[in-house]
Amino acid sequence: MIKLGVNVDHIATVRQARMTFEPDPVAGAALADLAGADVITIHLREDRRHIQDRDLEIMRKTVYTKLNLEMALSDEIIDIALKTKPDQVTFVPEKRQEVTTEGGLDVISNKNILPDIVKKFKDAGILVSFFIDPDQGQIAASKDTGAEYVELHTGTYANAGTDAERAPLLEKLATAGKYAEELGIKVNAGHGLTYKNTGALIDSMDIEELHIGHSIISRSIFVGIKEAVREMKELIYQYESLK
Ligand code: PXP
Image (cartoon, rainbow, N blue to C red; front, side, top):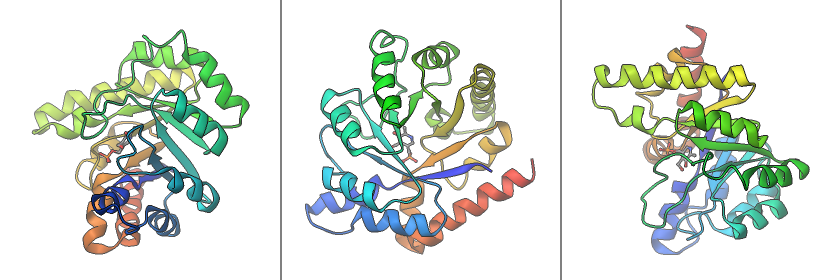
């Protein structure tokens, strides 16, 4: 069964809009957990625009499913992660000006430094994933670092306007996923996924974990986070059981 990772960053985005105490992403993570989320994801950005250090510290003690920390290749955040010990880290590229993570991480260009970093996390008992574009070179380079997972960037697929544009992008993701599986690396996927476009992705390829944030948190404003998570779990179940 495909696992659902719920990214609760945007609860913190609302809190930080007023620099106050509510809504608390820690409470959101607990409710998402109760509703069946298999993974809780947070991104501790260098600029701390949404998730704060305190959120990570408390969630490390209160999240009983898998806690996945998205992070940049930053010495400061690496130190924090190694001390806090989330269950999994997903390395992402990070730019201060971006609204959200834009492209995938360039693992090929960083291949000299990554094996040592991956080893530190593995030695600490933390799983490592790289958020990359669906590109065979990046997948092979990720495998060479010793990482257990790649997360394929679905943003280009999610942003496509028509079925004709979406078809080759789905094929590209599926081909990349197969290649990763052949290399023995687990395949996660995420970015820009919604209640409308996730089904076709599930139809097209095998996925270990789906990582979804903005769409679930947006829906939760109207239906509540437990219902929003349950609906996405149900959608995944429906599509997967028809395969
Ligand atoms: N996966 C990664 C690596 C991300 O950086 C993000 C955004 O924080 C997501 C998944 C979730 O993207 P979205 O909020 O568009 O669902």
